[in-house]
Image 1 (tube, one colour):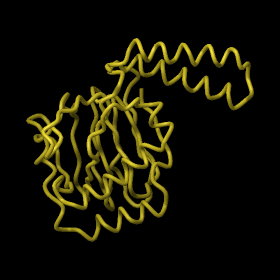
Image 2: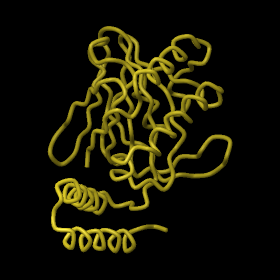
Image 3: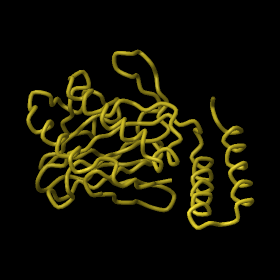
Image 4: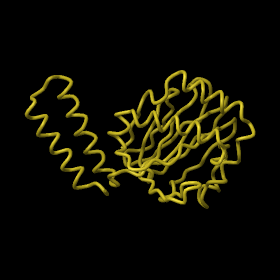
Length: 228
């Protein structure tokens, strides 16, 4: 399930993020420092050191926005969210085909998070750079994703994916992973569709009894499939 979530950050938040990232040239390190054996061989980008205070400050702002975003909650059913990280791709940089590691160690806490979902939040306008598409492969083929600033894409972390080479400008993004309450992607997709149907019934004044029955079905399925 590949889901786009618009408007995670507004214009003022995006300005704040971009200004901070551009100003702090000393915060950027080689992106391979957090890559596993597979990723290090194909990864060529820069990222903000996870220990840098600016990463925590901006990451907390993103997490606060996600907590208030009903589409993200419906899509991911988040149990735990990895602290958002930040990367940049200058001209010639790319990230070859790879699959994200199944478990990541949360910095400074020692906690581990299972990566059910991967997420990329685009931080600059699509017309400010060429290339840099996020290419995600699933059973239906390869999907190129290049979204407006402030928009998020969420997809299964088990997907083979890559970032195409940037040929003009600089691509800034935030990326992170989600451990969902429901680890199975097919079950999450069914719950997402059911939740959307319930919301449409509420918005259109549909049969209240049917909506309540479907709501009960939704929560009983979540109760059955949830890890907690």
